[in-house]
Image 1 (spheres, rainbow, N blue to C red):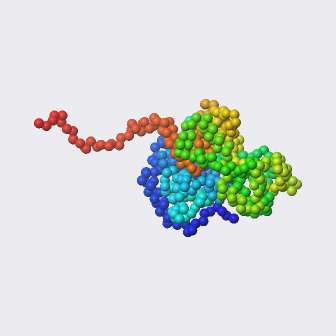
Image 2 (image 1 turned 90 degrees about the vertical axis):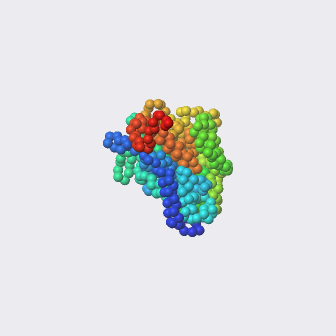
Length: 490
């Protein structure tokens, strides 16, 4: 069953999309965008140095790239995925539709012709837009593919980062692996647009160590769900990803799916959605640490409920069970490889188990960041919360500067670390949710780009001053006037 693509009342209109693209080109031309390059050309050891290297070609990386280009800052995106499969949308994501309201403008950076709505209406019309409830997941991916093409982004696919190495000479070296082999790229600044698990990976409880690897998966893993046909499946968790994994397994013919939810009830209200406002987007960065922690911790504790549509998608199946108030105490492996779970409500036999347990910041599972990880200042180094407000996710989050830059835990221990900018989900503790989620991604991209522009100008101020001194394009030729005599005529 394929619930990943939108259906509309009429076929897509290539002519409408061509007209939209012409309008977008005109808008950019009228605004003289992208901006003119103004940074000095640099070389090190005979190798060119690019202004900004961006790790990750998903929506955050693309938004950052456009914002930088509009300010005249050259950049290149490196993404480990094949072309057109950047981010989770067409790979590991399993939801039918996005959670976000369809009207949010996402990475459009203030350009009406670059919004999802403009892209959709150009092909399907206003009536189809009015009939659309939420944006289908794969249609969002199609939109991002179009975004990449019309904005002419320089994305180098199948480039995996092996190491990020800041140097004392104002350069960051990126070691890369691509189909052509290993290479090193030099950049003045690096932006890490590495997504929800950008500084770690999937969180897995200790009991996973007791299980055969072919009997479990995290909900973010690549998996052929058709392999679950006829099997008894358990899903640990009650969030959006748990519902998506459960529903996909059911649609692929699982014999039974049990959702094992420790809470006695599902959260009903998305407090994060209630906190969204221009005030928070622009003001969170400037709050005292105590308020930043208090807000983010409250949202974490309240938890985000699964979308109504995703939950109903599971409930449509008679062979799905919502086992609320269920905690796993022990797991044994039977002789046939099946799993025997001992829970507070009794035993449960399963053939396969999903962990929909979220993500964690864990540098140890990201070897490409081993050179910088020990030196990064975290929130736990700067702030001790009041008793009862402890929060491991926040404690492990990097304590970032105003341009999303990492800061050194011990000043002087790794010169150049501040040239690496954390534009992914773990930046939320310092900056609010402006570096990953759809609602405020454009605001975050402009904050990042403007901050980088200011930093680069400041460090090159002598170069720019010399340019001012040597600038000699005349405004006047000298023949525009005739000098008048001092004496007034009689």
